[in-house]
Length: 225
Image (cartoon, rainbow, N blue to C red; front, side):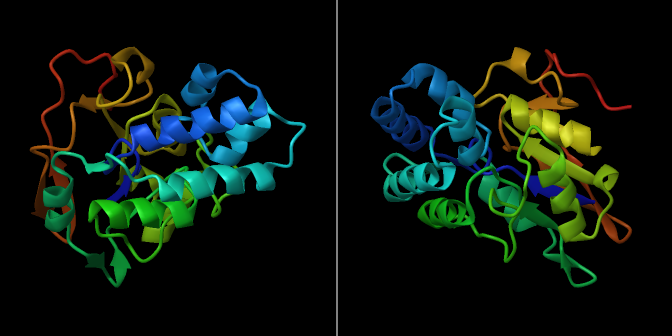
């Protein structure tokens, strides 16, 4: 089994930075800040820019957003259970890593946030600059599974956003969504719901691994078949 982690809302919380940065950009570019922040969560910045201001050069606008977010690590925190779970995962299988990060952030931003939070970063990530189509398209998770050398159906995705859960489901992965940052009713693409990564354990099964978790009792998400 391979494990594919979203970053923001799963490994670290940088909600404050995200909302401050996008609010700044929205006010600068004359779009509604509240709508902008809602759209931006779980999507590549360049896709959000294209959706809201298609008349602007997306690369120029991306640099503005990226620079602001990289500089703003105020109140960034590592989320519960993350470090224990990462430490418990076997590092490799036949020379390939067991897990990686699949994020809508750029690689520069992803590495900056993980470093600020003290989260170990894998050598290779799937980031916004790695794919041509971001979440909710399945391409990021298909790329992540390929990077680990697993079929998508052999991978578990940890996500917190609607677009991320949809992307993981469309890729054919088993999706576990946390309820940390988004309402339960928006996570119906997930197979399982958990509060956060606390209490998730890793078990060796032959030459593979199994993840043990206790889903929320009130499951809006549909169990995997």
